[in-house]
Length: 327
Image (cartoon, helix red, strand yellow):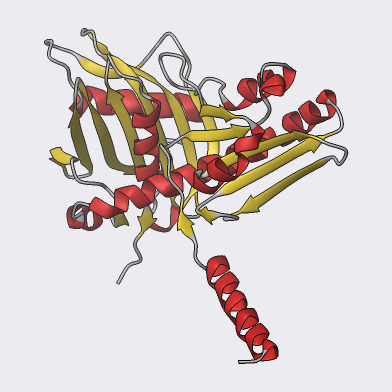
C-alpha cells in the first residue's frame, strides 16, 4: 500500500469516527434540581459567587421552611470538561477579555443546558448574571420538569378511570393509589417514609372562580379549596378539616396548561382542629369548551423531610395533563 492510499484510508476513518462521535448523544445524569457551577474558587468566594447564590439558591416560594431553588455544586474551572459533559445544567463563568452570555443546548449530552458567562471585570460578570438569571432559571426549571416527567413515565399506573371521569390524561407514577372517589372528585395518595404525597382531581362549574360577585380570583380559589377540604380531607382528630393556612396569603400566578388559561396558586395548608400542615400547589384550569373548571392540586405531609423535591414531583405530574378530545 503506497502513502497516498494510506492517507486516504486514514482520512476516511477519521471522518466517520468524528461523525459518529458527533451524532452519538450521551445521557446526562445527576439529581433533580441540582446544577454545576464551574468558576475559579477566588471568584466563587467573592461577589460573583454571592450573586449566583442569591439568584439560583434563593428560597422556593410556598414552602413552610426555607429550601433553595437549586442545589449548587461548585467546581474549579480546570475541571470544566468532565463535569459539563455529565450535568444537565451547568454554568461556566470566566474572567476574560471578551464579554458574552451564551446558551448551548445538548452540547455534550442530552438533555443539557450549558450557560457561558464571561466579562472583563467582576462588575461586568455580575451585571450579566443579574440580567439573564430569570431566563436561566426558567430554562433550567423546564428541563428539570421534563426530566422528572421522563422518570415518571417509566413506571406509570393505568389511569383509565381518570380519563373516563374527567376526560383528561395525567401521567401518574406507581405508588399513587386512589383513596377516595366521588362523582366529580378523586384523591390519589403515595405513602412515603414519615408522610405522604397527594394529588386531588376535581371538576367545578366555570362560573365558580371568575364570576363570583364581590370577590377576587384568589379569594374564590381559597374558598374553593377550603370547601373541598371540609368535604373530603380530614385529619385524625374529630371535626378536623384541611384549610388554606390563614396566617399567610398564597402566591398567585397566571399560566397555561395544555394551552388553556390556568391559575396557579402556591402556599401552605393546615388541618383545622389538628396539628398537621404542609405545602400545596393548585392549578385551576379553565375549560371553556366544556363549560367547566378542572382543578389539579398536589400537597404533601412530611413533617421531618425537606419538601422541595416532593412538591416538584407533584408539579411535574400535574403539568403532564392533556385534555382528551371528544370521540
